[in-house]
Image (cartoon, rainbow, N blue to C red):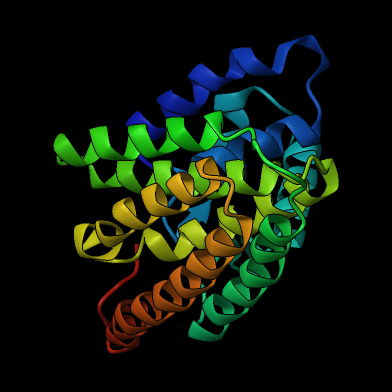
Length: 239
């Protein structure tokens, strides 16, 4: 259960709700907090504590929980409450199938160059800066931003919304990994390579790099995540 520091942080978010607070806005806040690791996988979410911190009604909070359960970020356990979801290895594999289908299709469907890669360039720079500072959580965040910007090249709000949920779910796995440097460091170079290839107008080359990238990323994550989940099954907790 989150402590006072975490609840104080949520109380700071209360100002974001304004006078027209809705379950969707509460969901946006909680989704961001879950993605940031504020509520790690396996955490039980207290209606009273979170509702009090955000200043919203129990019904509004329950509706936001329902929305995030639909997005597969939360799970409701009968007579126990609502928990941040712990992914299975099969979940991770399915997330990557979705990523490959969508991200590669976005790159394949790009028109003629030049491409609007400013957002990609910023994400690459942010990742490199975080790595220099030894901030591997920041590297992970920059990596997700890189792929969100890549998807945004499609110019489709529906695709952006779909992948926002997919990337948030993916980060549930990232938060369980006990060696984030080993997981994320190799992709700093690979993100830069994809960026440079798109800057050169080579759409097909970028798609090939991305496809190999996603395959390698899946294998690496399944290896470390599967081991971590197995340890949890033997009594080493996820939270």
